[in-house]
Picture 1 (tube, rainbow over the protein chains, first blue to last red):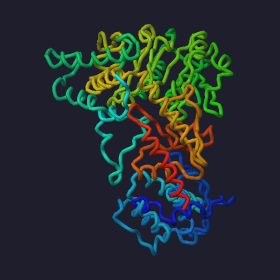
Picture 2 (picture 1 turned 135 degrees about the vertical axis):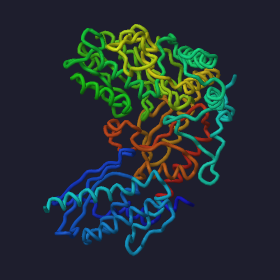
Picture 3 (picture 1 turned 180 degrees about the horizontal axis):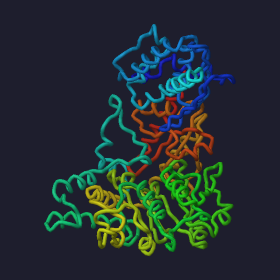
Picture 4 (picture 1 turned 30 degrees about the vertical axis):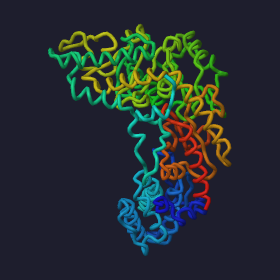
Length: 147
Length: 415
């Protein structure tokens, strides 16, 4: 059924075993984002080393889509430089807005392509983007700190 | 006339459409908005088709017909609430009704009984919808008054143990919901209205979840102001009701000013028309008011007590069915004692959004989230819940579909 496009195995796996879901006590920037329409919340810490994303850790409450999406994000972006991270984030954003017409670049997005089905459910796109928006915010703040 | 939900459902065209690849629509989200019967859809479109003109002005037949229809709707609302006709104000929504009184009180000058200042207090409850919380927060912030609240117990009832100390000589307003949109709890009002009136405060009742579902008599309730929305009472969107006791409406300053609401205007100043006109600036939402009149006429013909009894029996059936499900936790009273047909629950580790999405795939429409009552869901330690709400057109078939859908979701997400 169509629902299986939304809830792929990979998503449920990340939901049950979320990656980096424990706030690292040291960080360059910490942000707290909320999805006011549903009450999902996330706190996300970012540590940079120059322009390298050295660490991303988080804690939060939310649906499987929002939780899996941020879990996938941490796996994807830790170890990348900010420019590469931006390319991945832009590609993910583009996929989310594709209304089900695209499958996503698997080489670039890896597990995140499993979220392609979200783009067919307009009400859920915000869930998938919660962690990505938080990362964007935190990385900008962390970068600003470097002066 | 005997009550038959299946026959009633035939009056609502949307209930015969299908959802998500041919599934029967099981609509259990009437707490958010109700569906509309043909008589309401027709009344609204007939107004535009046959009678449309600006009410209370214009020297032509259409203006007369429009005014008759609009004022006729006001009279229907008044009868429905056992109110006097001049006590009924049309607004665009219940949210506007509650903002109307909060802003109007903020406009009250020294000497007016509604004037608020530092040292005064406003009392609400922890179970308020944001629409009956934020306007009062804002009024308190503008006037220096203090906002206080009655707490909610673990089982979802108001804790009235400190009522007499919380509502004291400083209290000017007690604003509360008649029925919680999250818990289904129906608040007993007698002690609250007695205490409020003892200290000279007015009682504002958010009746969005009660007026559509049970007989309402504003005189018997001994309240001072009431708000409800048309769209939750099988009426159109874009129309709400603000009711107030005549003597209080006479003293309450206006909120929105402009055309229609005046008695006399010069370049320097203006005086106000008597209520309800004082509170209805501009060309009103005539077609929607007429649609609401048709809605309340429809509900009255079926009988509000019949609707109430039907919902009690559905709620009992649903509470029993849900209680038997492993890992399901009902958020709110577990019996039908002082309880309406709004049932919130959580389901183990399955997030309400995911449950709602699964139910939708089965054609079942429920609400998920904090239901615009974030402080309440936070207090209860549940960031989000799934909420099913019933109305006159629902049957036990709908509830069986929900219960079986919940089992299906457990299986689906447990893989």
